[in-house]
Image (cartoon, rainbow, N blue to C red; front, side, top):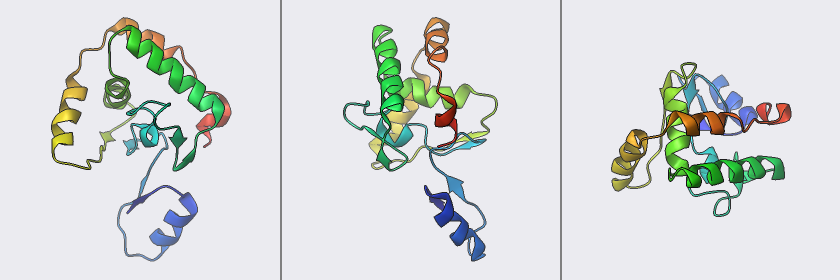
Length: 135
């Protein structure tokens, strides 16, 4: 079972009907939302949401910073978001949903897109506020 609200997931899990629960938009060993609900794939202007609701302004501000850094290095923001999950040793598995068959090919291309260590360093300097880690 996959979903967003923890209280709803807990109720489903307690039924005993599910063996696995995937929590979206949380930083865990199983990352099921690498694009932050769309703002890291479509960009924060086109998808100003996070965790199925309007994103807080500070989160959107950082998404704009990430997008600008990626643009300066000519790297799609979605490639950086996906590869961030794939390269982090704390994340064991990365799950990417697909709305159409051609998205699979696009996702593989994003996973293989060359990203310099310079860009990773710049992206790493854009730090979340402590409260964002609790969302």
